[in-house]
Amino acid sequence: MATHETQLAGKPLLIHVAESEDDLEGFRDFIRANLRILACDSETTGLDIYSDEFRLRVVQFGNHEEAWVIPVERGGRYNADVIKALRGVQQLVFHNASFDLQVFDRHLGVRMEDLWPKITDTRILAHLVDPRGREEGGTGHGLEDLTRHYLDPDIADNVKGLMAVLAREHKVKKDEIWKVIDFNHPQYQLYAGMDTILTANLYRRLRPLVPAEAGTLVRYEHKLAEVCSSMERTGFLLDVDYTKDLSERLLEEELAYEGQAVHMGCENIYSTEQVADVLEARGVVITGRTPTGKRKVDKKLLSDLCGSGDEFAVAVQRAKRARKWRTTWVDGFLQRVDKDDRCHAAINPLRARTARMSITGIPAQTLPAGDWMIRRCFLADPGHVIASVDYQTQELRVLAAISGDRTMQQAFRTNADLHQITADASGVDRKIGKMVNFAYVYGSGPRNIAEQGGITVETARNVIAGFEKSYPKVKQLSDKLQQFARRNGYVTTPFGRKLPVDPQRPYSALNYMVQSSSRDITAQALLRLHDKGFTPYLRLPIHDEVLLSVPTDKAEWGARRVGEIMATTFQGVYIGTGPEVGGRSWGSLYGADL
DNA sequence: TCGTGACGCACC
DNA sequence: AAACGGTGCGTCACGA
View (tube, rainbow, N blue to C red):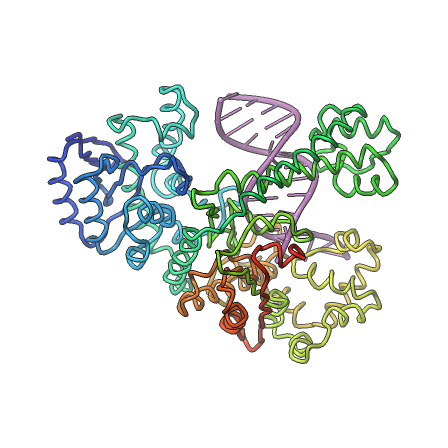
């Protein structure tokens, strides 16, 4: 048995490694002595849990000063004892449990459902303590960042440097190291064990720091993480033939237009500098500048030029679009599809400062909405169709609720046209009224609203004034929140979430409040859907929408039922839903299959 | 070779 | 008086 001695902030640590099956007796003793609570972690060959090459290599258990490292890749008793430990320990602490639990589910045969009830996730605790990333002045939420902030900066630096050192030693790229490194490498063993000790210590530090108002959020966020991890595990069926074909078509389009651009003197259309040079050589005057003073060549400029018949602009824009669609979406899907033709998104249920969720892998929140071509790649299961249920004007209704504004609430109650009300208050088009309704929630100023709506700054000021006069309580709330945020540095949402507000941007307090509350309304709906047994049909949560695959013969009923369960009354304001049933592909909801 | 900032663009 | 909130991802350009 190998044993490593090291230190964390001056305190001694002990890391045991099971090198032979005989060593497992010591491991079992350790588990028996720590049955109440242990931190756990795993080492794998990569992050692509659902790819064929993925392997689980090592599982570690630890408390605040001692850890065991078990090479489950050897199978046999190593495997069996780890499974017993996972089942036996009463409380398991992970950092980002969703990942490890999916790994154990798929590669160790321990169902997530069995483990989730006893999981504590330090990433969740860290977010409830400070939802800001490191770039935003917060602690960040990765194990390394949190270790640096709460435990021991030197250890954090070592962990960060380790990968690079080992990769250099083995002459491989950084993300390849976890596949090739030998289990007997002492540094590998040391840091594998260390991760659980860090997690155990983080748990001790973070638990008392969770704000009292957020106390009830702890269990709720863990349940939400469970539901989202279940969606990840299920995955989303990919129409592989269609997707491959689309990839080829997009590549052809890209090459054709890129060739035209090269012919017109631009070697690299992705270099803004080069595009600007060619445009100027063609007599275009570029007036816009980026924050760093460079010539601004963006979509708006290119579209305007396309409109006036500039063939170079047309070629650049079309090539860029085809390339973006192919590399960002289509090829990405093909790359991560598993052997059953399913794509597994990574859902982070607790991501933004406002707690908004994020979805990567299938970047479902950013797929083009005006076109069905990309969404057409995804299918409902065999015998199923796609259904979508979204909230109707979720954020504005939340604003009506938390501000208590009578006019806004009345408008929603009577189905009056809120955008027209805003427009009429200053005598502008409904389109402008709608834009300002949303822009106000984002905290936009007159200049921005003017640019966005193609109106003068003067008119923008009038529309904003009209908005504030129409909904006086909204303005009052914004002022109140700003004042509170200036004084205290944060605001607290109706769900008990403490959201830090930057002193330079007190106006963002209103948006944080609305965005965060909206997220919690969707999140709580997911928990209700889970309780009613709908989780197997859920595919993705997308802001104010839930996407499902439902059996064809029950689709209408199912979508309606999901809509009923999601619909809610928030502080007296009804937030209704719009269930939609499509065809076999997600694209059908956007005009495909017609 | 890798990491990072700037930029641009997709969405709510 | 004015203040655009949040996300993911690809590419270039640059520096260690």
